[in-house]
Image (cartoon, rainbow, N blue to C red):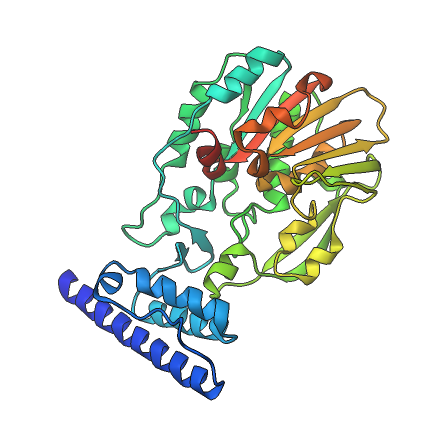
Length: 363
């Protein structure tokens, strides 16, 4: 029976590809478009599945109707029983990025950092939505065991490094709005509860959730997983901004980009991002290598934060406790992160990173 189903799927997929080819040729001819670079299907590329990727790349680069055709292909895949598009699982409630890497990464570089600088150091590894909502994935879906990976990395850290158990905190809140439905990141609500736990370990009293004013910036946020799939069967997300009216104020922000360009800013948020397909960039703006934020707090507490983009929406919470936060973007520095800021200038260091990104950077 399974073999017959696979044969049916294969036949439907072949028919879909034929339709895509004809649509491409017809519309290209109407537009007087030169099809000399069209990826002609060959036996090998059809067998190994690479031709569909070549075709999608061709459509995206050369024809304005790529989104329409890709959306048509995605919908057709779902009709014939496919539950994954472009490495993204389609579930009833959300889009979930496929996680398959079994490599846990290691704590070696982190331990070396702690041994060299001897400043209080904290580690927060954030699981992907695929781990928290594993029970909603299609039957037989491949999914890496990130809980096991986190435990492995935490157990390998030096005794003085304090680890925050983000996995169990988020698991206990999985019925709440802690991850976006159409984006791979956590929400500000999810980030708040990790901040609440982490900041206590770091010696501060967290600002009560009730003290924040929550502004809905958009109720039509379609994130990076939507952009990958163009599947619109999932309810759009709400993008929030948390403001503590009696909290700290930003004095100045100094940004250094990867090309060495320096920029001075006075505001944290980038409202222009709300008019783009990358609304999540609202929290910190265009990705940069380093950002130093000074506040009006005169407590001598300075935090060095090494983070990937999961750290973006937790910054407003952390700013309530420090006179200065230096943010280093691990996605741009890789394992050369120590070259971007002088750790001995700071009173505490935190590494906050998704498990996926930790695997990529710290193998």
